Each structure stands twice: as structure tokens, then as C-alpha cells.
Image (cartoon, rainbow, N blue to C red):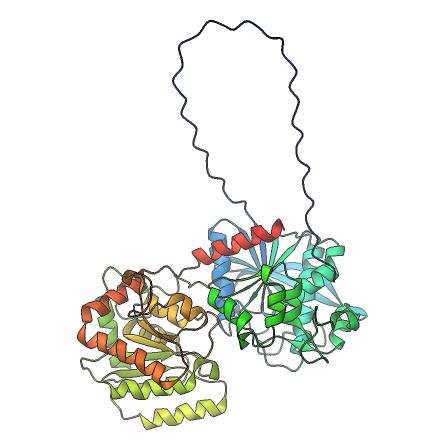
Length: 537
């Protein structure tokens, strides 16, 4: 494997030799001058970086999941810290162009080598809420990104291999030479492979790559045909298990290649970085992470504080903040009115999110039953891409249709989500695995006490009111460890009991969560440190 080229070391500056002086008689003693005050050195400001992000999603124009929010939030935070950021995306036919300002042609003739020929592309530019974006539009019979959806096609590896190659070809042909190229998930994990095997020899030798993995479950595998399409060739070379060879010897693995070739690989929370190295949550990539552990770490995602701000949220009934949380009770009343819940003195427990196996479906169902049996109300907002799971929850909704303490909305509704975060007292997040998690962060921001399984980013952000070893002023929720019924029952019981018998302590916990800084400011600073590290490595 061709290693990433190292920057040349600067020669140490030569120290001039002083000429010898002729000795002279000592002058008469003078009055000793007052000691000078040492000048306080001015702190050195970090240099401005030119950063390009390449990803398959960016909110709000191309959003399927949390990846879109990360690309949008991180790029904005980096810009606010003074860095130059461009985001490169595919030009999907289903882009939300109503969020793109000043859409214009950036490059009409981009030819991307593909098989024995080349595919003609155009590159458009525009601004998405202040973020500079570039959109690569291929003109070919494959119609890579003109399919009415972002994902879900049989040729996914070919679509993203082409996009990865197009990103590097655009940087090469446009003359852009950023300091760092930041890529995300398996869809762009082929970028560092192509860079160091091809493009570093053709003019991009100083470019460094950071890869962020949001979900290890999706890795991108394909047979040797992809090597022919991209011009990498040499199957025997790339199928080596130390490079891109998958567990299945008939395939190469995009994400594995990204880890091997990237200058640094991050995942989305420190605890998840430990989990993927020491448990089965890496889905087979634990060994390659261990080999390259000196270039791997976890950086917690941030939360978009402009979108999620209870003090200025237009989608909730009453604004409030950590200094005065009384507005939360007005939102609780509005939530009950909207979902036809009875008005009574009892807590509201909620779940908001996608209904799939990762989220701990049996524990979500049990939380509903257990909450109702112990004097709480329960609301659920979410849907499932799996028809069987959707049908199962539709039957559950029908079962509780006439219950005045329960309401279920089996579709996503942005306004309803904001109102639930603002009006509920507790939020259950019983995930089987959760690399970072956004739900618990929003809940903390809105003063809704999270009840979470202590995995991934949930363990990095929620600290148990009763058992955490940190100061009480920093404790903000309830955690449980085993993905079983006794675990979630224990956490729910403790939360409901505190709400009923110690309301002042419960309010104290609410305020603790709302004061916690979960914005993108801190994570963006950590990424800048990574960028600086790999630039000088």
C-alpha cells in the first residue's frame, strides 16, 4: 500500500556566529535599574483552514438521518470559528432546492474517468443557509443520482464509488487545494483509497483526509468489478485483508479501506469508539481498528442550537430557558390538548424516533405498559421503514386508542416532535446500540429528563441522578445497562418516584440538563485539532 505522503521537514534555521570582541575596562557602577516587567505573550491564533466536506447527505436539502444534521451542524460551527468550508454533494433530482440560494454553474466540463472512458459531469454551486455547497451532476445512462430517492438501489457501491472519484477529480481539475478533505461513512470511504493510490501522484499529494464513521453496520461491499470501474485494478492487491479484503473473501469493503487509508478516522462519541474496538458493535471491523488505533478516536456530535432552542422555538406553545422553566408546563398543557390526553397531575413519558430494532423495540413497548401501570401518561411519535414493525405498532395504537393517558402518532411530524420535547417530562431511549444519539441531546436541551440505556453516546451525555460518580449539579437523567425489562423498569420507577415525591429535586435535574453545553462549538474545536494533527503528520 502506498502510504500517505509526509510533509517535508523544514531545515532548522542556522544560528549566526557572533564575532569576538576586544575586552575593555569595566565602566563605573551605575544605579541598578528597576526590573522590567516581562511582556505577556499574545496567544497564537490557530491558522485558518480550508476544509472540504464530501458526503451523501446534508440537512435540510438531502436528509435521511443524523448524518445530514452532522454535516450541516459541523460545517456551520467550523465557519463560525473562522475556517473556510465547502460541502460537496451529489446533485440529486430530489434535492430540496427551495433551501438553496444563488444556484449557479461552477464547472461545465468535468470529465471523470470510469472504466475505459470518462463520464461528463457538471458542477453547480449554491448557498444553503450560509454554507457553500457544490453539487456534482453526472450526465450518463447510469443516472446515478436521478432516481427520485437518495438510497435503496442495487448498484449502491457503484454510485458512491463514482461520486468518490468525481470529488477528487473535481478538486484536481478545479485547482482547489484544501488543507483537509473530511468524508463521511461508507459512501465516501473510497476517497482516501483513491487519493493515496492514484491522486496523490497526480497533484493532490498534500491533501489529508479525515473519515467520520456514523454507523458501522453499513460498510459497502462489492466484487472486483468496482476496481475495474474506478481504475484501481489489481484485485490481488486490494483484496488483501490488510487493505480492503472483506470477511467474505469474494468482496472488498469500502469502510475498511477508508480506515486503512485515511489519515484519521473518527466515530461519533468517545464511548462508541471504545465499543467498536472491544465489542461486536464494529460489525467485523474490530481488528482493523485495533491495527490503526493510533489514528482512531471518538468525537461526540453536537446539537444545532439554532434549530433546537426552547427560548425561541416557533413550533412550541410557550418559550422558556434554564433560568425559568415554567414555560415548560404551558407546553405540557398544549401537548395534552393536541393528543387528547386527560388533564391530571401525572408525568408524561415519551418516545420520539425511528421504530427499528436498533432502538430497542421490546423495551419501548414495555416502557409504554409500565408507565401507564405506574401512574404516568405515554406519548409516542415515530414510524418504521419495515412494514411488519409498522403493522405491529398500528395494532398497539388500536389497542390504546380509547385510553386517555396514551397517544401514538405513527408518522413523523416536525411540529409534533418539538411539542413533545417541550411538553413531556421524561424521554425513553432504550437503544440496543447508539453511536451518538440525538434524541437525548434534544431532550436535555428542552428540559425533558432522558431515561437511556448506557451505550455509545448516550453514556457520554446522560449521567444517572442516583448513581453517577460526578457532582450532583452535573447529573441530568437516568441510565440502565442491561437491555432487559428489569433494567428499564428500575430507571422508570426511579424517575417517576422523584417526579411524584421530590418535585424540587426533579426541577433541579431539569435545570442541570438545560445548562449542559451540547452545541457544535466543542466538537468543532476537537475536529480542528484533528485537522491540524494530520496536516503535520
